[in-house]
Amino acid sequence: MRSIGDLVPASASPRRLAVACLALMLAAALPGLSRAQSPELPRTLSNELAVRIVDFDWVDAARARPVPARLYWPNDSAPGARVPLVVFSHGMGGSRRGYSYLARHFAARGVASLHVQHTGSDISVWAGNPLLLVQRLQTAAHESEALSRGLDIRFALDRILAGGTGPYAARIDRSRIVAAGHSYGANTALVAVGAGVMREGRRIEAKDGRFAAAILISSPPFYGEPDLSSVLDNVTVPTLHVTATEDVIRIPGYYSGPADRLAIYNAIATPRKAIAVFNGGSHSMFTDRTSTGGRDLNPKVKAATAELALAFLDQIFDGDRTAMTHWNAKWQPILALAPGVSPHLSAAARGRAAPALQR
Image (tube, rainbow, N blue to C red; front, side, top):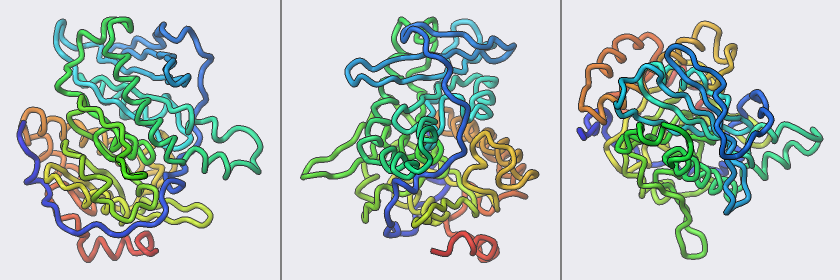
């Protein structure tokens, strides 16, 4: 596999970060779960020309924890061809139905996408007494739930690679499995590829060696850990980081700006990483919401993010930089920072980002 270290060199030392998990983004509430079926029986919801959509209502019996998932499968892949797989984790309050624009783009172009739902921090946090919302969010943001999310990813990957889920296991290219996520889900993807914390003298993590790369959209900080490099020093796979100059999380008593996304990027020791920063936008424009971040910019960023993810995979898996080069040229007008540039924003970009970067 060709290294992508020449895309963006490691540079700035990690910033010390404040409390994070509640900062794990307040993505808009997404549609609720459909009524559960047998935990081992997939339900084919759609069989479009290019994309097949199948729901799984799995239960991890060892943890007594439901792990619903939705698979977007490329219908037009050549018979017998191996299919890469992205395993995607949603943000706080999301569900397996979210980020469908990414999943459909991937599957229509030959890359399967499995979207995992985390029952301890999914759409259910928005239900119930509104006076207890902050308490539910705090529970969902606890590090025990963060670890459970990582175990959800491992369990879902185990299940989709097992023989009982249909024809998919035999078709997945096990050398091209990618962890991905937005916001809290980006943290979950990092946990899946090696992020961990020290507690009472031992490292707590849920690393899964089957992941060959990670796509991280709007990564928040980790639980106020003062040394991000120690949290992320076991992340050795290639990583793609995506954010925006107005990628800001604001909740009562907490603020997390775009500089925190750059801190995550900088703290990863491996040079096999790339970062793209869109100019403007918002934290939730990377969800399926269509109005946030600007009605003109929102669809452009969605299209650009989906294209960038596949260009990144082309480069790390095939050593083909063509798609990345075309991507840089095509989307330059909406970028404050492109892959291949130092993660220090230019003076002009810093000026545009100033309101978001203030702490």
